[in-house]
Length: 77
Image (cartoon, rainbow, N blue to C red; front, side, top):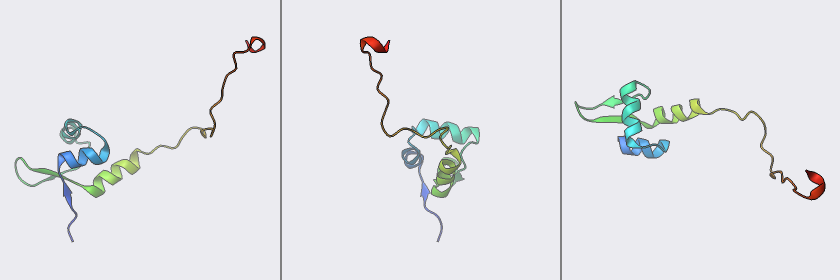
């Protein structure tokens, strides 16, 4: 079965971006697309998911569960 194709607005919602950013990334060649006609462009969900996976970066250090609180009492300055 062929993959479902998404509109620019749907792709923007999935990536958490504005449709104008999707348009710019398409024009810059940063985002793969399918051209259905001279004006109709669609995006594959698998391409968007791959973009998300490739953009993930590990944290440099573990995040503490409880934030540190700095005391401003007289003896702590």
